[in-house]
Length: 559
Image (cartoon, rainbow, N blue to C red; front, top):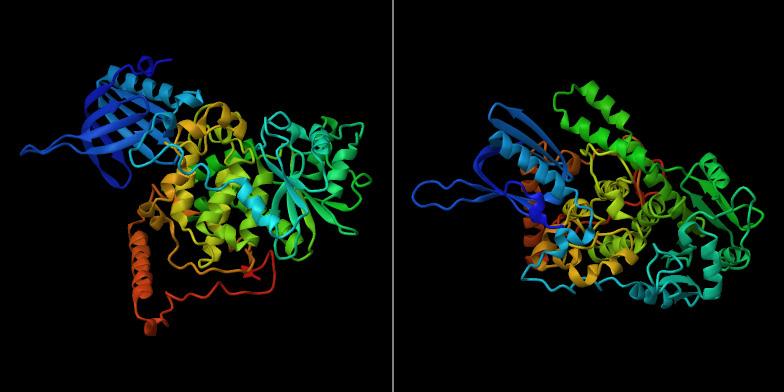
């Protein structure tokens, strides 16, 4: 396929661009293989036109057109929730631009996407791809205990197509047992280590559901693998992110959950979390409500509640707190799985680590967590983020699971403003780049697919750009103080907030808030540079967020 075949009209003069909060701009619209560009018309005295719009076409979620006489209007609804309007003179030009944008935004081939063509002069292709290798995380664990080993049983992706080549498993279990256990788990996702809790030596594992089936099949190797995790008389918890009824129905379809007689030292807990279509529809309803500025207070609150988005946030945080509590308070190992083990499973394991581990709340630690628990762990970004909240296409596998994770992390940052080293801007950047990006980090559905497409050889890493000093500074929380305590969030309805910085970012101006944060940054920086006698300034020496006794459903607590 040639991109030129999809571009029916490349340039249109006298196009007017409108977007909320900004005055209309008139200029020349150009459409290329990957971008829509609008250059404003130059003024007098030989002034040059200014590029006012540089839109990655992959960011377009829906194209709506309206024709009136010789003037056409195109509304572009973007995956980052921005809405743009283009008034185009000429009916044919308008229809051509609309159809070309629709065709270019829905190109399916991964290797035809912009990251494979993006070549900034300031970056090298291989930079950033090896910043957070699993081997480094394993070495951290190996320095604490010899109970785990790094296995390359999946080196050629034949055991599990959605796992990375190397995984961390119990040292007493050989690769033969792993292969047998993989046959007993959906998609081959046998139990592997997700997190080692240094404080007490407990671990969190993740997997997919066991293939018990209606005949209650057993797998001794799988039982042995999970048994090897527990020492002596220890007991563990299995957190199933499906309801008991859903797990029972899955057994009739060949899946199921671990039966008590076969796994006597593991106690099963069901904490159902929505995924797939219900979660996507919740996202759509929330965005619709946020975009309707004519709503009365009662109507707004009703629509916010009916979207159920904050209920999903509450469910995710509650389940992650349960996993964290099992490890921190009960000193028990935890296995997390749902059905496939690539969605709500990763949501829970990743969130639990942010709650438990102060290293995961640093900028580099958080990036490493995303690499390990989302990207390498096989979350299908390509399928889940194919469309955002505006698309008219029939839903297939889209679901904002990763966005839900980012929202939960934002809630943690909102409740514990001193405990996260990074700020909201990093979360917004991650949201944008999962749906449309010039970097290859979130391309494809698995490490196997990324290897087949040569993603790490032919595209740039998002981490390479984000970790440049000029960008790094923008992502730092000026109030951050290292906090070694566990942060226990409140999940009471009064404590959970709408993430306005994301869902209202294109609807209301953040100018004054940005100014306030810039002033805080200035004060902190000037205080850090001041002589030692000025060390009493509260903004410079913020104490960690206050610690209180544990209450998962009470006020926000740390400890």
